[in-house]
Length: 92
Image (cartoon, rainbow, N blue to C red):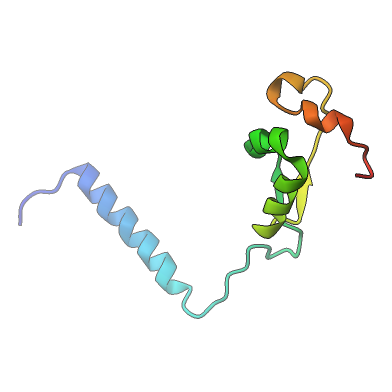
């Protein structure tokens, strides 16, 4: 058997460990929210979409399964693409 390098050993061992973990779950059902808390999203990753269409972005996030979104005060974030949020009231 030819010698194996450390890197090849680590790659093989880690791949085997991941595969074993996946197979060991067997028939278990995995849930995205095991604690029963709503799945949320921060607004930073979608800031460009928010700047173009705030309400439409919220609808898209809801369709993707997000139930909450973390919003912060738009004051100070005007240059980051959140200026559009300053025209909305909290109730909206």
